[in-house]
Length: 228
Ligand code: HEM
Image (tube, rainbow, N blue to C red):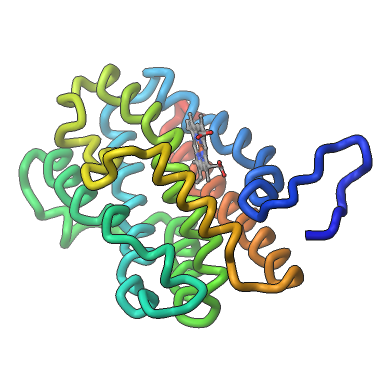
């Protein structure tokens, strides 16, 4: 990629490093958002954790339902990996969080911000495989990274069994070595078969993905006064 940063900054040349650098500030923002901070600071009840997990279900349905169709796509296909799929784990978590009943399947509704996020993911999955990669990266690499800190805190805060029901979403059983998996994932990003202009659009879409996450956190924060 050509350099666009000021000469005093290290300009990443690998696309994976560029994506990480371009989203660094937004990552810090979502990580320290009121809702996340209060949730992981132990200030909210398990109900807030449940509402958050419900929103993830809508989002991962949007990410994973088109995965089969994208598996053969030359751009998105290499990223579509069975080991990453989160929906089955999310469904177990939700049934547990709803007291062992799966009535949640009939009762859940997404927050407006979640519906907008899921709609954007569904749209890029249909029309723009490289844009889908931006969303894929933003969620799955995050789940494999900071997600583990989130899981650990949730287990301690609400007493879930270690890697058990309630936090299975964060457990990647089929990935033995997450660090190696992430290295491989970054190699795929570096080899993305797109020109520089398209890669810039992917960076923009990744930033958009962070903004969509921030909007979900904001709406969740509005629901839980402690997090306001
Ligand atoms: C409290 C919440 C969070 C914590 C504590 C956290 C923490 C972390 C940490 C420590 C890493 C670095 C791991 C490494 O270098 O291998 C990381 C990476 C990442 N996180 Fe988060 N994170 C949080 C929330 C989020 C959210 C909400 C998203 C996006 C929706 C996200 C997306 C990412 C991504 C995409 C990476 C990979 C960056 C890269 O190496 O390219 N994180 N996170």
